[in-house]
Image (cartoon, rainbow, N blue to C red; front, side, top):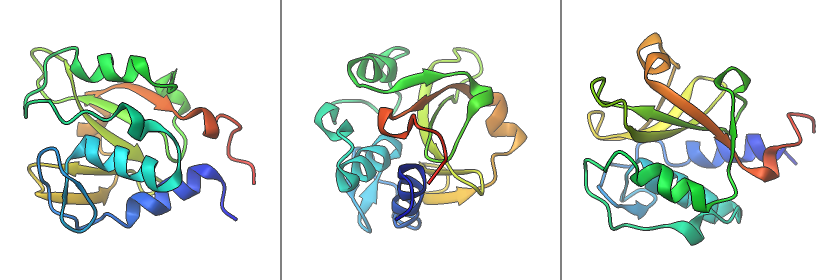
Length: 148
């Protein structure tokens, strides 16, 4: 059986092609960036779904994402320690640098639902995205590293 990090990536890949839908939570029908994380967590029984809240705007406040993350059991890590299945948090507006986007790290790069792409996609972790990276979180279930 694959380790939890690989299971997270494999499950997230099942959503690739799912249309972007603000506050969506349904594979094949529509998810947003938070919805992808919540749905994968729910399918794997990782517990993040109990913190789900769809009462947010398309342009979340500068603290909204971190306010929710603070309630979870996610562990913040140095961005140099990124591993499969980790949750990447990005800013989209360079002026505010507020956390507004979230994705999974994969062996290809990142899996996320991005409104501009209009769907869940997986692509390389480009220089553009690296510059926008604010922080990295890992589920406690994945803290054991990458061993089988």
